[in-house]
Length: 255
Image (cartoon, rainbow, N blue to C red; front, side, top):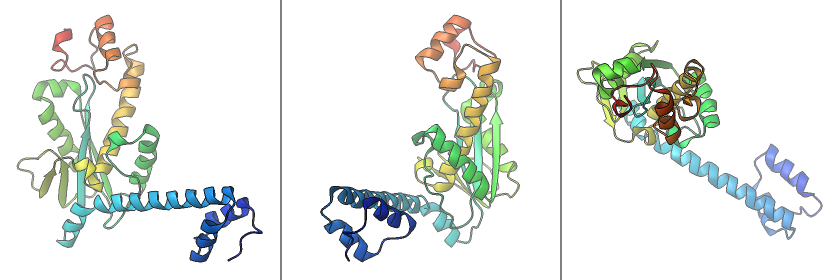
């Protein structure tokens, strides 16, 4: 295939608008122009990245596919955000995705940039069969401890799904005596697409709440650290004292 008469811009347009043929790829690879070689190398890197992403997505469906094959159709992934901060609520989400659906880029929310989380948040809400969210505030956390508060938030998330899941995949936590069958998965937000999707929903909602709280309780920097125990946050507590948003069971040394 002779591409010597085509400019690199024209070749780039051809690649962008359609899947290049085997003959075109061989011609690109053999072309001696540096700009064409760069175009070919960029295309190969892009395809390799897409392949890795697809492979990762397939790996994230191992638990879901097993359950689907057993006859469970509404698999709900559950995760939380906010177990560790010094201030603010713990937020849990339950996400039921359609059988067989792959959402490219879904991963543990902590691995994603805020912009990527926001984009995936919108896509998950658009495509999910059902989503429920539970929020337990700092006062309840102090009352029952963070683990029990997390379980309460997860229970709320399940109950608030407009279509209830028939099986639960939960990141690290078990919901004792819950009537829906469940599997607790250590590191589930890295191993299950449903749990990873829930981690994104919970994280985005909690981050938005902390941004709102930053206007109510200025000076603490909640919009930056989201309530986690950064040096900036601890300095603000020493300067301003504890706010009504702080977890007393987490901040006793500042009292």
